Image 1 (spheres, one colour):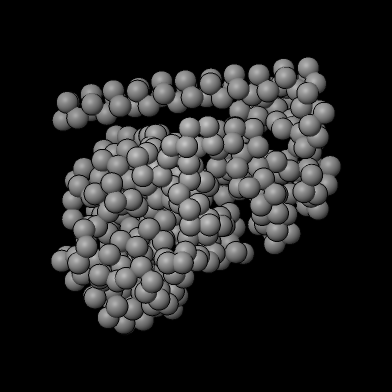
Image 2 (cartoon, rainbow, N blue to C red):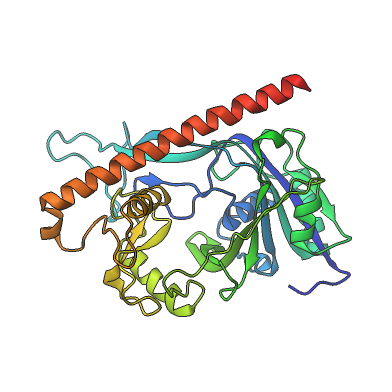
Length: 372
């Protein structure tokens, strides 16, 4: 976005006991992204303005959003029921009832939340428009919530309006930390999510640019992640871009097209766990740079970590592990049963290590706070 004298950045503090920013929810599974989605932030502003859900959202297309993660938050899974006592409506407009008893059908759903997370969100856009949004957020028409109505903020959402710079990365890198932040838990700095183009190195796809909330229609945008020092500190953040592997061109249009095709084929779900997919895994690098859909698998980050750790332990190079073969006959073999057990075991090991590490960091943080 071009910078000018009429451009500004609106800063929002999104903190609360629970947050939920859905971007890839499927049926009875309601996931959350690791940071606020663009559609969620736009929805928050629309509520403050008092907009109807059918209102056009063209005015938000000119905005760019960046996020600074000050506390990543803990992932919490909750279970909900819907329809008990009154029933669910079918696509034909009829109330669903169970075939055996004739009672109203009850649906069990799983919903993810981020517990105790904290974000600084920056919106870059025309000053006149951001002034209107800032005024609405200070006196909202409808109560604000952090992704879902059951997630109220623990502090005022409006933080500041920066009129002296329209550089999102600069403002988010230098702006003061929240008074609730725990620097001791961020020894490697803070994660920053910035707007990008499809050709940006390490660009990640997001389908959260809202065109309309009713009916729900969204367009694509791209973001890139990096790490920044804590404001006022100097650390070595290193290079966090995705490095080429076996000739794979991860930033090419060809790779994005074939990876998206595989994700669509798998319903954007991890083929091994059934959870929302975060990435695409190679089962071979034989055609690196010119991959076939059948040589890829959609995986969650946890499953992918487990599989790649097993590959490293086994010294594998071009030929990799296949955590879920497309051919059902291959999934029925004893060899696959052993592999599946190894993957599940490695996932459990990773989770145990993460829990131990989180506990150790929390103890160090408490010790540092006590010594101060």
